[in-house]
Image (cartoon, rainbow, N blue to C red):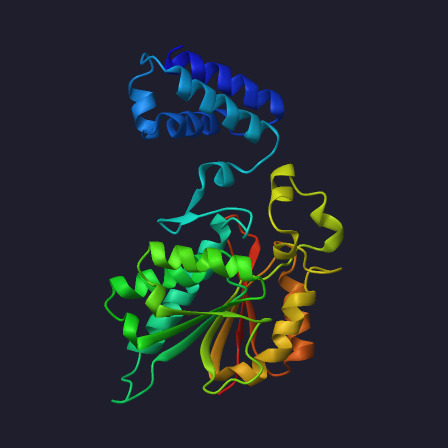
Length: 298
């Protein structure tokens, strides 16, 4: 069979299973089976496909038709211009989380370049709470390295899942920044913080428990603990808020990813747990609440 014939068959199979991006997914899976870039398929639809590649393609199609995420089948996911290894040890990085990375990078740069830091000042401390695959911490470390200021920032990445931390370390090694990130197995933040953090970022579970089982079937392959945020979706975030007074420096900033319907709820929660701390919510490209900014008064 040719590339075009296999793609037509694969697209039909995925459409039958309910895929909303059947053409793109079929192209990516066939490219994986052939070991080529997707552009090669599009440029040469007449190329014949060998029996081994056909079998590999058919097997991957069945995995996807059964609901397994494309990122797990391919073994990686693009995030913030980088490729991150993905498997069931951690949540697959989402495009909306790129807003969190962008905001964190902007804040770090503002603190490093907005006013002269005295000679001998310790590196700026950043914490990525609930790091999962390490997408946020690794992306920040890569960005800071590109700017030539990596040594001016210390990044701590925490997670209470040892297997997720293994995945995060692998991604850090893959991008050459393992020496710039301290990975720690713990619940949220250290109980004793020697020098407080100036920036804390967190993409913690925020899906209400009752809604987790109603998510698309592909999500069921991901670790539930990385999704389930308790009855109202904010239970784990609330515990983090309680820890911020001990962990965040005066004038520090916490950036928290939230659900699209949690903009008002997060500020009410912050007002109750952290009176006097300004809470602002930024929207994503679709105009939905996505990022809560909590500032500790100086």
